[in-house]
Length: 516
Ligand code: FAD
Ligand code: SF4
Image (cartoon, rainbow, N blue to C red):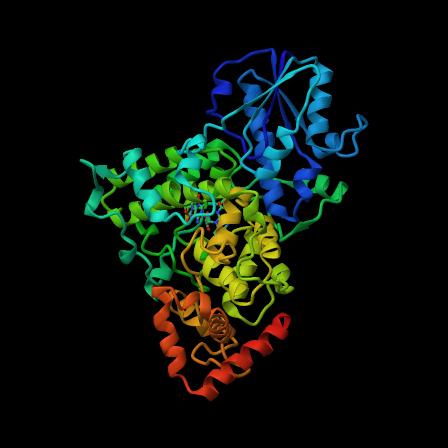
């Protein structure tokens, strides 16, 4: 072989120009690596999904006539060739096949980009190419995202809409406004819950993968009790996309922030669950956006608020967090603006807590390797923010638990949006909320051990006292913000004894976090 090309686990992009032509002189290498499975403890479904998708991708490339070497953990772990990591593997393969060129697609994780940029081969030239996946070209990130500066997602999103002419009409936003958030954000009523759609699940036998993980003692978190439900190839990803457009999109925006404990489909609701397919690059963001817009144009049940809400997530948020990540790494990974040093309680690994909202969100994360955005942000993330858990621990948990977790997207969401650890690069204020937000958007509180209306005492909703403690503690920083300032008037108007009881409850709960 003249050329060896590396395909990482999140680079399963069949539409990449690499594959336009079959060339017998090119060897594609896809490898299950110990280093990728141990930098954090991953959810068992996440590892299974990646390994299964990588193996399927190899099979599909071979079927098209490409030369592919697929290495399992059995081949790469404690191998007789003596390499221990990705660079060792590359050196070994390039020498073994006598290649004069080694090529890779630019990794989306800083850690891997750093590692690969240190690669030196004596006998082959090294070439890095684009992944051809994202909408905003990589070399434009620096201009759009100045280091350390707050960039408003809304402004970035509008620029992207205009630039790529998405949901635009004669230079104006379709529907006359950029943002339909006000029509979204509805709670699910009893009659809405009854008609929730069945989530479309796949079924892939992962017995062999599980045996490999056990053989090589790869630590995992979470559960897998049945065949893998996640899409593991392009065809399944496209089926899920079609299902989403037909069944979920008509109600997507409306119930985007809603949560319920009442229905078997409570873990998925109207969400697309396309994030694994997107982040492994089985499908591209533009084809998802185009498919959704096509449905909007042909299905009268989909109104502008639903399609705009969906496009915003992918053209806006997804591209935005990638920009924030690359502009601010590696400093971003050590930010801790609020000086948080708490420890994650044990229920993050088993879900058993008396707080119903946390039990629901954590249990489904452990059962499905999935929680939707508001559960990640306003339940689990909010809890970590208010209880001042150290950002590294929170990051590590989020990076491990979700099937779609890859650092470029996980970190700005966790450190930036949920924890405000970046000091305001993603948001101008922390997404801190008391229990009343959770009560407004869900039915969790009615089934909870704690009382949502109480702020102090043993049975008071812990989110309430934590919230006021947080606001009180960070008053100097937060009261300057016009969007928060008003809240301090409410706090100041409370009885001194009520304030004292709230703060005492919060301190007590913080000390006994594991028992909540
Ligand atoms: P849908 O609700 O159907 O949304 C459609 C798509 O929009 C998603 O698939 C995703 O690609 C994109 N999207 C929506 N919101 C965001 C966002 N804030 N950032 C980036 N893309 C977005 N997303 C990940 O892909 N990987 C992560 O590791 C991850 N970690 C998160 C951690 C925290 C603390 C928070 C608050 C959010 C995180 N998100 C992450 C963003 C978002 O929660 C998930 O993308 C979404 O829940 C995935 O489910 P879905 O495909 O059903 O999304
Ligand atoms: Fe969560 Fe508080 Fe509601 Fe219980 S009462 S579900 S702890 S918000």
